[in-house]
Amino acid sequence: MNLLDTLRTHRLLAIVRGDDPEAALATVLTLAENGVNLIEVSLTSTDAYRVISRARAALGADYALGAGTVLTAEQAGQAAEAGATYLVTPALAPSVEEAGRLGLPVLAGALTPTEVVQATTAGAAAIKLFPASIGGPEYLRALRDPFPRTPFVPVGGVDAASARSYLERGATAVGVGSPLLGDAVRGGDLGALRKRVADFLVAVAEAPGAAS
Image (tube, rainbow, N blue to C red; front, side):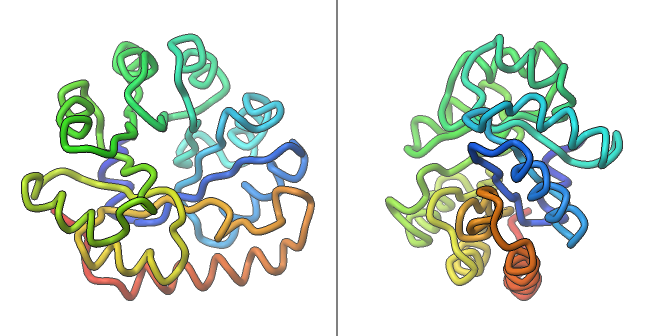
């Protein structure tokens, strides 16, 4: 898959992380059914590989389903075997190099300018700006000055209001966890999840175009 094109097109990456595999799977399927076209399942989740495998079977081969918090080469390989078509890391890690060997695009975590350069050199398709909440939208604006063509995806503390702010300042997409998922990953209200999905989709649709 072309991860960068998918990020540019859809602009919202949902991050599923939880201790209840059945609730995590239900959350993934609810997100997909309600218009979220990019989802990652964090490997910190209970039985994460099986959640990815079951979600892949339900969503089909073409859906943009990834594995998150991938740190090691072994994890990268297991995620690929489970059906992940891209990887997401919180930082530069051996998984980034292994993703290249496996032919999987990777959204690599970075915060500082030095890390941005290192992640880009390592072959990242885009930069996961993490944790974005440390500097907020204005930090992204500052990073865009020396890196005007680097695709950034802020993650960490992003809600519907800040999602628009990040996109206004040149983010290619935003990654959102608990502000979008709420209690759904704990077996909570899927109806409320659907409402939050609608709110986030409106927020990203109304924001100015992403960076080229």
